[in-house]
Amino acid sequence: MIKHSETILVVEDDAQIRNFITYTLKQEGFPCLTAGTAQNALTQLVSGQIDLVLLDLGLPDFDGMEVIKKVREWSEVPIIVVSARDQDNEKASALDNGADDYLTKPFSATELMARIRVALRHSYKAVGNKAQTVFTVGGLSIDLERHQVSLDGENLHVTPMEYNLLALFFKNIGKVLTTQYIINEIYGPGYGNDTQALRALMAALRRKIEKSPAKPRYILTEIGVGYRLVDE
Image (cartoon, rainbow, N blue to C red; front, top):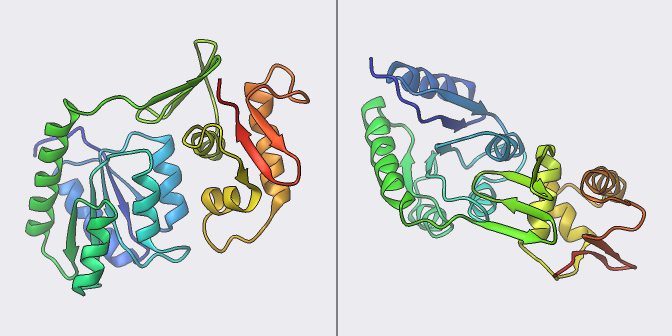
């Protein structure tokens, strides 16, 4: 058996299907990780090195289409949708939102592996043409491809949620983001308006990136509106 270096993330809430896919991947020599929810999948994508995603659309916390949209904001990792939805409009929507391929359940192990090989080949060809996505404000920098944060030239350890929050601000430098918008983007649709959780997350991040958290230099509070990352 050939041992592959590419790690595949299997996002599927049905244990029987998830076990079938992971067994097939391991038999083919691919290391794999699993996630049963959209939030777990996003957390693993941010915190680890994933080379390809097999994504079910019918997830228990929020729809797989939202996962595709969120991932495409910061990553070009290949995404193959694996879904029982066989309507043409569902397939078109997934591909338009950034999926690389769409495989309809039920499927064979042979077809699954063929789709994976094609997606990985396309990914290898794209790597040489893909520019690194790095944003910097003052001494604070984020690399959206490597999922790394640095402060004054030193790598900075942040949690997955802190990274997601910081990435959201960097992608909207200078813009005022309302509290509810941030909650929806960080915690997902339907989370509600738990501003206390956001304030705690913001405080933890500020303690890591600010010399004086009480007088922040980077993420500024807009009184009565929300927050923004300064544009230097």
